[in-house]
Image (cartoon, rainbow over all chains, first blue to last red; front, side, top):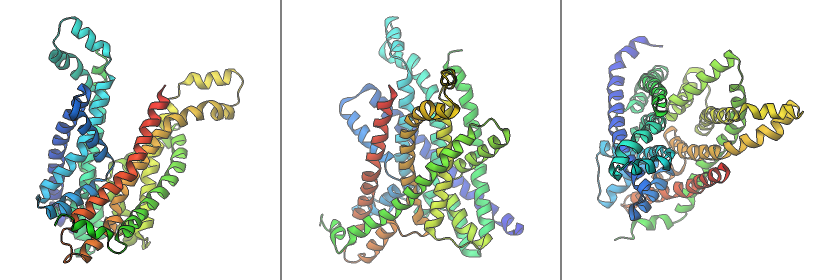
Length: 219
Length: 225
């Protein structure tokens, strides 16, 4: 192990980790938006949109992110549609994440008993109010474990962004291996970088899960 | 020139080559799935033991496999082992090792979940009517566990197949690599081939994974009642 080498290249990893987390957060944000809309479309069974949402979920869940990115980044420019690397990364991640988030939201929404809606209507709440005050708060708290697992999954998936020529953690590690042949050091830093990124999120997720389950029972 | 790009697919044996590339990826993922199911069932049983030492070790194994992106694991085995220990593994072998390690962890957790979801009174009732321990497992616990486990294990298979696409990044010649070769070879004659080839791969993966995940969903629904 060459400690001097490690110290010298730490800033490079920090920068790369910043890129990973930045793209991850933007991607997760859009995934949540897409997921919530898709799950609501399916919940309310809106005629045509429901079909489109179903096709979208099947397409996105049954293809790998890497293949989606190759299509977006190398394929689409040939049809005259050109995105930057960052845009491709975010579009790809949101396309993939949207369907996973939708499934998480959907399982939350489905877990709410029909009685809840009927009771709320019978005490005179409007449909919008039923959604706002009765269904969504319970459904969201039930979805949290799934949503957290998806967030970790999506941040892990960002590791393929190096194929878009983005200088993320994988790219930096591969670069250092290629340039200096310091495989051990580069890989060690890579593992530590991902641990530093993902461990806190995973710990926070399990903490949040415990808190929310408690609230879910209405205690 | 709308139909220019798609022509590449049918030139020579390009399409067959793509399918063969997909076959390489599928072979690796299926090998890993079979190994993971066998090892995962063992791991899952170990995880239900009340022994604190095995509990701690399996927990660390599971969490470390879960938290590392699979691509990082691939790099560790493919580049790391070679450099540190002088073990020179081919890309295919590294991929099988990594996906088996990861799949065993995931499968083990599924098995553990299925085993502990069987309520205690099932064991007790079995014992009360005079079944031996082995009979309880054989006739009461196993059938119920398998019903809960099968859809989840099938879903894990599709995840494995999708994740195997990463092996192109450690230099295995699979479907994406073949695609790059075809695109490069036709760069001047068919400049827009990338769109069609990558689009085809997108649908090839879909055609492979969709029936499997649909079956998992169907089984899950069927066995729920």
